[in-house]
Image 1 (cartoon, rainbow, N blue to C red):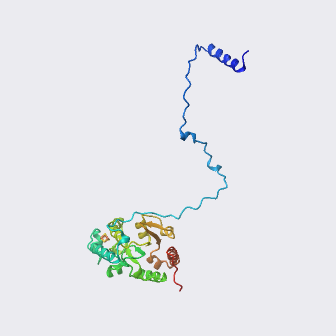
Image 2 (spheres, protein in one colour):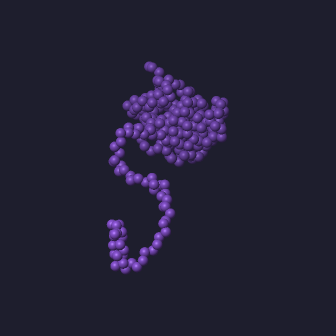
Image 3 (cartoon, helix red, strand yellow):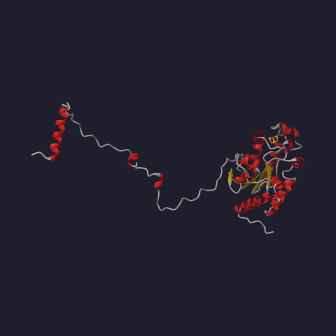
Length: 273
Ligand code: SF4
């Protein structure tokens, strides 16, 4: 007596015969098929909206930062003594004094305006370019904007000589126009040289020209401020230029907030008035 599976098989063979199949090839038992590990691990993907687990929400993304390559120096900056830094800066300043890379600026300047301050400063200020007063005196930030900057420096509890102060350009653009990208590019080697020698922990970019050129950014200062960026090992903060504060006194408040932001990062507090 046939079992049910045998009856089903005989029926299937009869069907194949009627369909013209005369024989069935003998198949050797095949080796077990190995499944690639990747396939073993494949599981149906949950739809993106299916995540309803009780895990805590992801922590907020870190504050935006930007890493930019450090300028290369023959000697590791942190190993330079104060005297060596003074010598390196002096040598670079002599090179700058003879620079004629920007023909228009070199032919109209009274002198180059290299930079001043502590060769081992913890904080470096970078502005835009020398103005008429700076061009005459050979020092950055000595005009009206510079006097306002001095007040900001004092309010932070510092003296000007505690910091290192320089600009994106070392020559005055005629009529105080903005530096062209070509001029900023020409002078970048000198700026990077100064940053590499002084090796500050903090850099403050005063105004959009400084911020955009140093960080290769294009967005407004209003959106760059109150955030930390990186340039080499330095933490970089951007704020409004003192010249802008002279035209828009209301901007003094956000600048003071930015200075407090800097001091807090340094573990300092502004001196009480
Ligand atoms: S701005 Fe800089 S690169 Fe241009 S001429 Fe002056 S020192 Fe040279």
